[in-house]
Length: 194
Length: 161
Image (cartoon, rainbow over all chains, first blue to last red; front, side, top):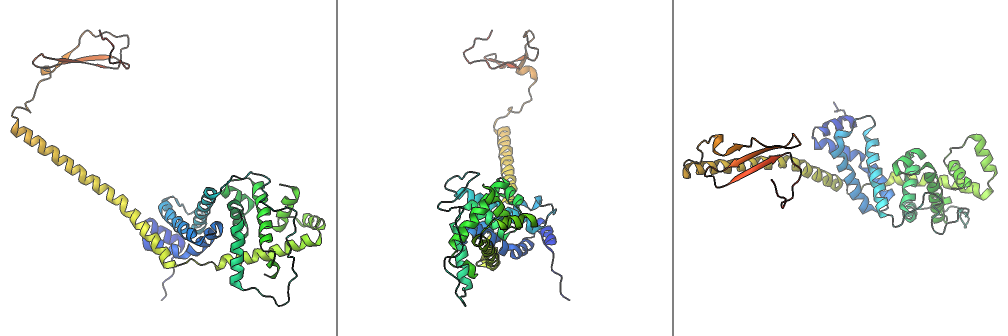
């Protein structure tokens, strides 16, 4: 008879008792999502590796405080988001205002549709898409990248993003607007073929 | 943030009511509408991309975490042991010193009565009842210490009457 796989809750319970094997299983289950989140927010695989590991270590140290009101994955995700945002803030070279954060050289009214028409049968290699998206994300300021990733990939609401990032609802929307513009500009030569 | 930016963001996120959406789209030209469609395609590509990101060297990733956790687990357990050992070492030293004193200095532990070294100050007067004074006098009368409790700070060069 197959042994039933323990739930996250069960693994958390065992981890709280000091069972590192149980925690290892939790790491295995959640590492991909946490790494992907941190990687997309920071834009560096090496740094994301270190930070994602740190997230799990922090989670282990804080397990006593995890009350199970939310899913373990949600709790872990929050630790990862907060840590990535902290790092983004530390990295920020210059402060940005709450409003009117138009990134350099982008006209809010600019057109971002491709300048070249789509060619029939034109297909884009998947690896090329990955590379271009990663490069485009890397051109965003840390604040803009964080907001964009949390909204588009993690599907958080404006309110949730505002709370995580520590800014106003309006700032979240403004950052989203400009981050999207910038992404469209960076990818305008091919994004309609995606 | 302009109204356009606000509305455009809500439009792309599907946060508008049907009426709002129709009204907003009517205000856009064909190119702007195309942008919206293109963004949705880009968003899907980003989500796909996120789903394809793999943790590099997953075994190494886990091993690094476990190594650090085990190191942290060991540290707090090592602390009490070290303190415990230090406490025993200190107690041992004190016991040895006491034993040596008892053997080498006969009479060192002769019980003394309070009268051997304490004199009570019977005429201390102070405005503050919290102040009290005691005198400690050496048995050979070569010196005495007056100990006052409850006083404010008194500079070293202050003359005490």
